[in-house]
Image (cartoon, rainbow over all chains, first blue to last red; front, side, top):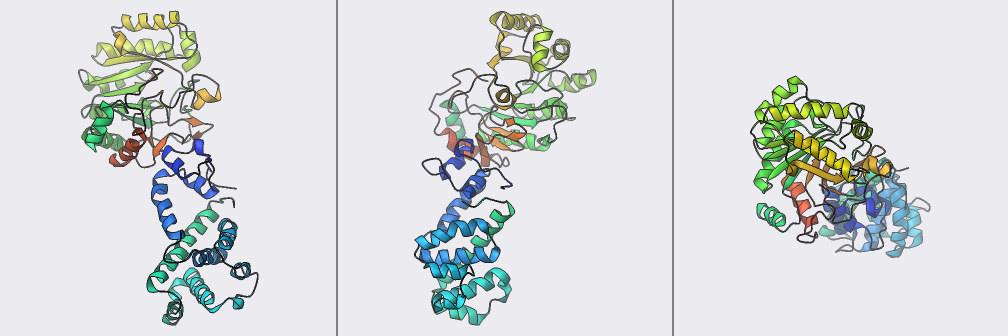
Length: 170
Length: 277
């Protein structure tokens, strides 16, 4: 049960309505954010930049989102991003491994290095080591490491938001 | 930004008045109240005196030419007479009130307003106590007819506002006869319909305003900035957000910028089709 209003488009502030789809629908997350149009104006483009395809491919981003959401226990984000990860080309068995439904050991080396990095960043960022970083940089450029870490951080922020406010999964 | 504000005002896309919702607290509980205000309201959502004075100063800098203060009942705020005088020294100001709290002590504190570019706008919905008080609350009529001459005597400009539900022309004419008898000219008598929002919506009263029926006038409340003073309404204790402009109210430039973006879509020259003011 949501702890904040989930506004239908017609009841949303005028400047929030632009973030709804043409048919007037929107995700529960968007509908909850609509009560704060000023925040939305900054947050939505930020999330768009962080989560859309960039120098880091969409499949890698979705892999990060699913794993971070699993670690943070966010029902909303897992429900929203399992299908998104599949659509982005993440194999189903990888998604299941990210959700601890299969052994993580089955992941290929690149994905395994990313998951190891993400787990430490999410659970104890102070414990990131140079060795862990070097292992990841075997697969990613420096700018991609920056972006991947921002994806993880933004996802934790949304995980906390959705969980604390009880945003119902889509 | 001043240029943009002045241009939007000149083109009729927005009003020149900044509105301030001083408080949602009220000693009455009118049947058509937009904000469900009443004496025991849990969340009074008042704007601090200094926030209202600051907003008036910033409004003047941005090209607004006058201020309106409403609520709730403005005179429920203990320091309101002094705050009103301060705001009126910055821009011409009208304060909306139900006219029931003008004790001799309050009248004395209002004396600095004599001759100032300020007015108090008192609600009076009928020329008969029973009809007026049925809409507004017990003894409201008697208190208003007692207060108005005292204010006028002290040189304070008084406007009368009549909110129309089912009153007929004869009843409105009766109110006109009353305000004329107090020396209040016709141009200082505002007559407008009940707007179907807030408690009026719950009770099925009033007219449903169309998208361009009400002139946008930047309106600040403790909940944020809204499109016009009929926008920050409350139904079943929850503030409507459909006409929210911005959650930020200070500095005024922030909500004013968001407001200008919205009124950019307002047809130039569009005005109050139904004279809802």
